[in-house]
Structures are given as C-alpha cells and as structure tokens.
Image (cartoon, rainbow, N blue to C red):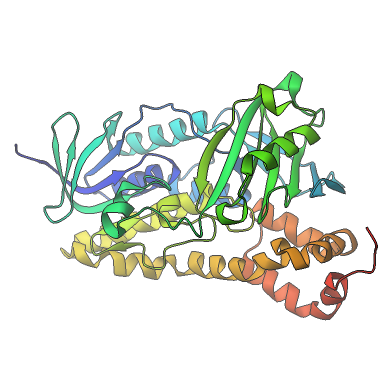
Length: 390
C-alpha cells in the first residue's frame, strides 16, 4: 500500500504533541498528529497550570491560554507529612484545569494550524528503518522526522531503547476526583510535602470536583495505596469508597539522549518532568516546540537525520534545570533532611518564597541554587538535626 507522506509525524496528542504539531505546521511543514484516543479524553493529572506553562503556550500559539475552565488560585496551604506549615494567601498565582478540556483545546489549536488530525487512530506498526507508521486501519504513514509525544509508556521510546522507562527511577502516582461536597472546604490549593516518600500529596479544588492524589518514587513506596489512604483520611475522605487511578510519573529520570537521528522524544516520553514539583505540562509544551523547530531546520536542509543534534542543543536549558533539581531534591525528600527542611520552611522567608515561586513556575532552578549557596550557612543551621524530642 502506498504511504501518505508527511514531513513530520507526531505520535501522541497531549500538550507535547499538540505543541510539536502546531509549531511544525506553522513552519510550513506537512504534519500528521496521531493518537489512539479520540479527544476530548480523560487523563490522570492534577491539571496544575503554572506561569511557565502560560508563557510557553503564548510563545507557541501566539495567543493567551483561554481554555474554559481555567481557575486562578492565590491561596496555598502547606503541610509536611500531615503537619501544617501554614497558609499563604498572596502566593504567586497558579491555575487549575481539567486535562479533558485542556488537551482537547490544544489539539484543536494544532489542527487549526494545519496539522492533519489522526486522533482516534492507533498505531499497529512502527517501522523506523522504513520511516513508516502503519495504523490499525491499514493506512501507511511515511515521515521525514518522527516525534514521540506518547507519554511515559511511549511506544516510540520502547522501539528505540527496548523499554519506556527505568522502574528503578520512575515515579508513581494515585489520584481520585472527589465531588465538591466530599472535598475540603478551603478553596485554595493544598500541598503536603512527603505525603509519599520522595514525593508529595496534592488537593486541587476545581469547579465541579477536587483532584486529590499522592505521588513519589516507585522504588521508595512499596505501598502507595496506604500512603494515598492516609492522605485521604487526613482530608476526611473514606478511601474504601474511592476508586484510585494510577499512573507512572517520570519525574527526575530524563533521557540525556532523547531520540536517534530523525526520531525525537518529547514531554513525558523524554522524562521532562520537574523532579521536585512533579509538574510536566510546561516542559511538555516547550520540548514539543523545540523538537518541531529542530525538525524544521533538519528537513529544510534535507538532512532529517540531524534533527536530534539540533534538538539536544535547544534542550540544554531544560536539561540544566532538571540536573540542578535532581541535586536539590534530596534536601527536601531524603529522610535525614526532612525535619531540617520542615524547620527551614517554617523559619526562612527565603525558603518559602523560593519554593512558592518554583511551584508557580516563576523561577528557574539555577536561581534557587544561587539563593541557597548565598544563604548556605543560615540554611545549614536550620537544617541541622534538632534536639526537639518530637
């Protein structure tokens, strides 16, 4: 069967894939956007939209993000392993959305830019030597550059590396959608640092429901259901009455070489998730954009196999932030530092302010590291083991 030929084929139509398809189409390339799901579709995710996400969206789509609903939250209640750390009423703004709405919105924008809509079509065969994708309906789709935006369980990553992720380094999260009448009364966001080991719990109240979940490193959490049940109990919710949904979370385990020649991995498929906050939408969109720009450069030079080299160059700022975040993460989550971090968070306005800016996507990890080094003597005093008998 003769193949339909495209400059770029994107597999996966979440934020990373939609951004890649929209960017490639805007660059004048012939683009196919493939996903086995039909949109709108459900997606396990807290739906946290940071200021970084808003900036990246506007860069990519040349318009402000106006998905409905998009709820602004300025109030954040922090706790540490269930112990209250205080409520901040003037936090840098965060926004909440349902992925059902957000992802559908992004797909529509990509299609409006000119991407061929092949959502609702599953891939049967991925033939990289032939540069061809075969869909389950029998169609053959040829490509110059392939962009794998198909999430943590990426079939493109499996084809490249034999597996989608490393179980020793992957994270895992559980989540429920609680009806508002069963949700906490507070209208603000709640974050419980270390509600799971090397992770946190979240409570994101939205218009019709509240997304509640816990997530952390899989290797450190042998009973994530117990951590989730304990967190729900703290919210006054009976875990036995809830149906948990689970998903692997690739935070901290990013691929230093995300692809091969004319095959590029973006978003969760490349492990581009913040290893401290777990936020992945911003890096998903940005990596989709820069992968598409790298593909456009390579195709216009008639050298599609050079796409990865250009993509890795453009990806360096994100990789640098993730490296620094991995360096800082033990100060928050390693057992020997936990009480020290809790004291530092309570006592230091610098720690609170930087953490809030980090959560809101208003500061990069390089600035956080510089602030920590500048104030290192005081922070070390705060984080040294306490004689507090608690």
